[in-house]
Length: 261
Image (cartoon, helix red, strand yellow):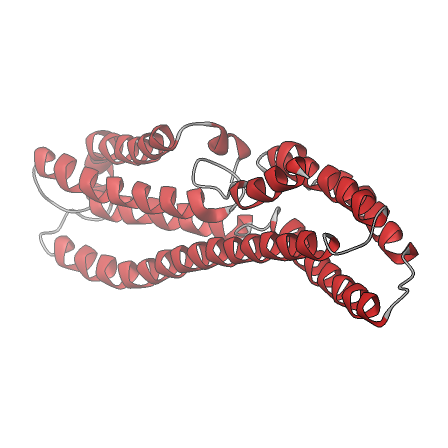
């Protein structure tokens, strides 16, 4: 999908999508229908044939839209779980470094604070524009290097340090999964099939023999629903973009806690 759709309010995107389909349906009913029916013979049995084809076509197209809607929702939910896991791992990492002796505790806290501030203030706005942030790599490397410099002096410190390293690896894995989700979306080829199917549905409706008013009402109703379905799928397609997107809210309490330390 074109990226500008994520820069408009949700209600405008929904109205634009449904309105475009309704307009296409009405224009076809007014101008294309009088031409298409005579080309196909204009027989009284044409309604039965079109209805039969439309019912078969509708089954396959409905399955396609349903599967895409489920896939978009599952992708959104999966990414939401990744963000929650990352935030939980970061909170646990912050708790672990609080047990380190000074000055390591303060140094690690400063580095983790700088990284968390970057995630909330800089990385997330980039993700909302579809850009994979790169600045966190340097900050994570600096934190890791500082963590590896620590030399445990007691058995308790060895256990604490091993747990902190384990928690760091868990967080790093969740972070990489989040970054990989930034560009995740439904392939463009599938969107072509979706729009082609929607157009085919409306064209088949044009072939029915009924009054113009009935065409405008029934065709407009079908077009509005198709537009709403496509809007729903597109709005959830990229979990980090648009009004229905994941925010940095899970990281903000951690940043506030680090700022107080």
